[in-house]
Each structure stands twice: as structure tokens, then as C-alpha cells.
Image (cartoon, rainbow, N blue to C red; front, side, top):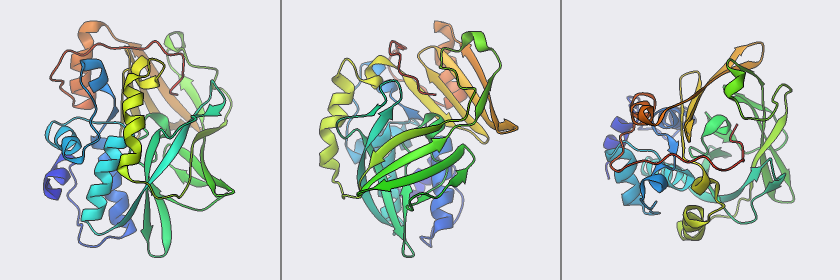
Length: 290
């Protein structure tokens, strides 16, 4: 594994001699714009391995993406290699349709300590809830970013990440199956604690998310990538492209349903992904990703 090869993968040309916040933020933004959040392996008959070398080969050498346990595990290696103080943390994702957080650990994120402050670095959430910058670990303070306003709330040692959603202008509303999103809402994203975790603690959920028939990742094929001004996502056959803050605190959303023969070309052109095996799109869950 070679840090310069990783930088080539994310098209990072900046300096990396000094482990400071500016360098951290720059590398992070390059990563989320180059490496998709995706679970396509599951829908190509492949397993997702929780192995750093396998993840490196997949993301860096095969130009693929990954889910949280791949993206953030790789990022932890990158940041440690550059001299950052990095700790793995575990979280539980919020499902709005169930109005509840996952019962078991199902999300890997990173804590980076820098100049006496702590930051959350999470390059593995994807969709419109992906952070674009490291977030300082402080409770009750709005932290505006391009995707929207994020905030941490801490209660008795448990930290909650929330985002204020903007209004959405859906150009072709007839193709949208999402809930009514006319009003701004504060959307819970996930909760976590500051208990340090070892990668071994995620092997169980890494396996369950691939095998549980009710798992979001089994019932939906997902590929999302952050762009210069928004995101694009392919969920099943539905391609959604969002431009943040298009006008008056409103995100512009364009949705298109693809034909089977368009999928492969779209993955290549929109996400720079070429798959080795036959991909079978899936979207049977009613859980919303937007």
C-alpha cells in the first residue's frame, strides 16, 4: 500500500508534510469526490471483505468505492500514515420511516484529535447526509457546510449527528417516490459514543449487513458520489442528481429512471466505475435515502 498511489486515485496534488486541519480537510474533500459510497459488490455476487489490503486494492487499484467500513477504514490508514491521531468509533444509523436508530452497531466513523480539539471525519455515509468537511466535536453548535447545516447534540455521553434539510425543488416530480420534503426539517443521521473501537468489533455487522434479507444494503443497490456542487446517486434504476443551494435555500433535484441497458454506461460516466461481474440492480426497500 502506497500513500502516493492513494493520492493519485483521489487526484490530490497538495502538500501532506504537515498534519494540520487544512490538509485534513483538503484530502477528505478529494476522497469523497473521487470514491463513491457504494454496495455494488453485493449485487454482483461478491463479498465485502473487512480487510485493509483488500479494501485498498478495491478502492485504489480497481477504482471502486465502498461503504462506511471500507471508506473510513482506508481513511484511517491514510491519516495515520500522515501522522494524525485517529481513533475508530462506532455508531448506529437513524431510519426515519421507523423513527428509530439501529439496535446494533452499524456504522464506522473516525475521531481525529488535532491541536487540542477533536473532529469527526466520516467519508462513508454517502447520499445527501455525507459530511464535506471534518466536524469539530462540540455539542449544540450549528456547523454550516455546503450540503447543509450539521449539528452535534451530546446527552449523557451519547452524541447525535443531525442535519437541517433544505427545501427541494424536484424538476420531474412524477418520478419521485420520496416523502413530501417541502418544509425544512432537522433530520437525525446517526448516534455514536467516544468509546474507542477496534476493527474486529465491526466484523459482525459487516457480515450481517450483507446477509440479513431485511438489510438496507441487501434490498437496495446503492452508488452515490459527491460532486463539486452536490451529489449524484444511483439507487436501483433511479438516478438522482442534486445541486445544493440552487436558489433561496433550495436544492435542485433531477430524477431519471434508467433502462437496464443504461446502467453500465451510467456507472462508468457518472461514477467512474467499471464492474468485473454482472450487476443486478435492486430497489425493493421502502426506506428512503433522501
